[in-house]
Image 1 (cartoon, rainbow, N blue to C red):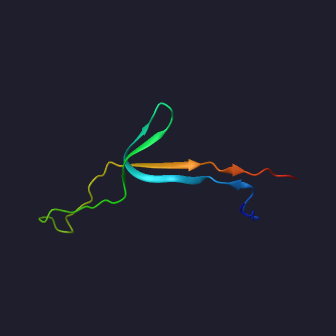
Image 2 (image 1 turned 180 degrees about the horizontal axis):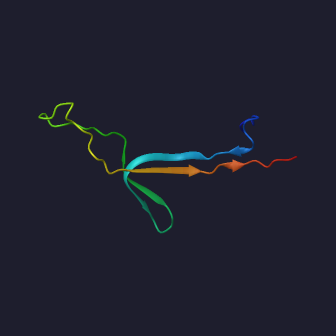
Image 3 (image 1 turned 180 degrees about the vertical axis):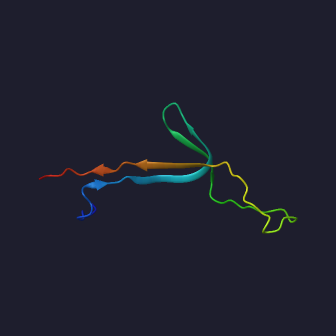
Length: 78
């Protein structure tokens, strides 16, 4: 069990359960989320005819999915 410090007033959390860029997120009828095509790297290569100064970043259609756990709250006694 983690030690309680003076800064920690009994609240533990929220905690990041997952965070990912993906193509889309589906929510099933039972409430379960499915992350489709998780992206961990994006490589952009401009055409050879374009100079560095002319190059621009392409528009990317990605979804950021973040899942949090609330954590717990310890009971305080006075």
